[in-house]
Amino acid sequence: MSQDKKVLQGKAHKFGHDINTDYIISGRYKFKTLDNEELARHLLEDLNPHFYEHLSPGDFIVAGENFGCGSSREQAPLAIKYARIGAVLAKSFARIFYRNALNVGLPIIQTDTENIEQGNELVVDLAKGKVFITKKNLSLAIKPFPSFVLDIIEAGGLTEYFKKYGGWKKNSV
Image 1 (spheres, helix red, strand yellow):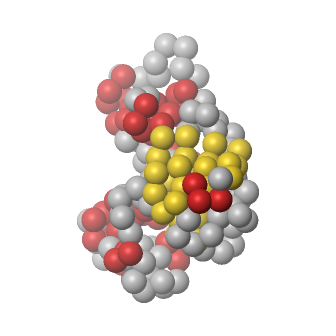
Image 2: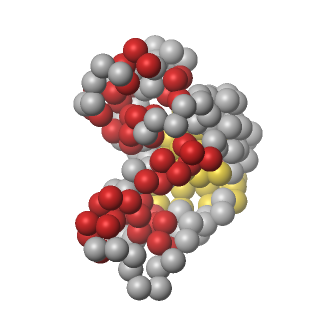
């Protein structure tokens, strides 16, 4: 993975616990269109109607426990990815959401998010396994991704990884 994709920077957008996939992208949209750009414009709007308008490319969604619970539809991580979110940071993730996110190349970071506040500027170093809260001069540990997961994220997801490498890279898993 290239160095520039290993280090992510952006602003924190903080949410609570149990953010389910219907909050991430409401069913009133995910059943009407396959256009991921359109879905992204409605990201988390049931919790914050103007959320998409306040995003900058690379910003982070920060949440508590059980992020992505609910249905297993892939539209939720795709809507986040197409909104140009740098990564999702949470205390824990629903397992199927976790897997779907990696499949589409969305970085998901499990860490203690209590000390991250709305609007904090963050630097996430995927290779070193650290989240830095810049104004607080505080770093949080994350479990570093194995190199093959970093390769999947860099490729843009599992499908793109297999297109690029024609299968698993030697010694990657």
